[in-house]
Image (cartoon, rainbow, N blue to C red):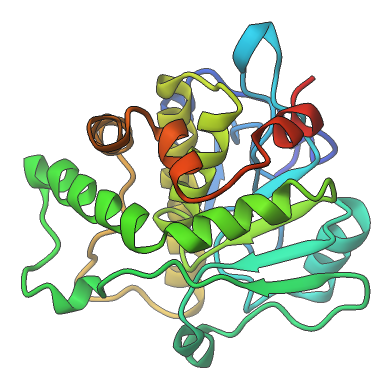
Length: 274
């Protein structure tokens, strides 16, 4: 899994208006896609690697591509993946939003000359300690809204510090484990201050469903399929409701970002909008 996605333009991922139109399907032990959303960058063992650029932003501008990337865990990267990230994409900063204890289970990005590693744990209560199972059906969206809004408040320093690194002007990749929850929150905060429409922020978040499907296909073929599949969905409505809740608390998601103490909004816009 992760190899042989013919026709994918790795050089410049662009915006896909309808990510939910891209339906993964399985053939034997591997997955093919009718069309891999153009935000995705194909790698061998990174399954949710995407360019955050390409979205329409404020004043008729666009978010610049090739500068900010998001992904799932980098603990399994191959030499080819490192070449892709460091030499082809030019990543100079890697931000890991996970707990350090997660590295013991899943690894972390290796030390690489020319790449600065940042550990900004996005603090939150462990979901497995909440005392309730991961919901299904209509319960997913309110569950995620509650978790995400709490994570924004508890983890505000990681959001602020991540945006500070992104504002440095050098190519950055930020990630967590699956690249959907903690990573999705930082991406939403970034896109909000760049003036991206809420619906498109939710579309960017929803694209993780494709990355999750890619990971599961690789896992099933290489590690075996678990008896019970749990969690790991990214409905757009969850992000829309989270943005709405942050609006009720702070005025808007962009105002929340300012409340974290991040004060380089204009520098960020100058560097990342075209």
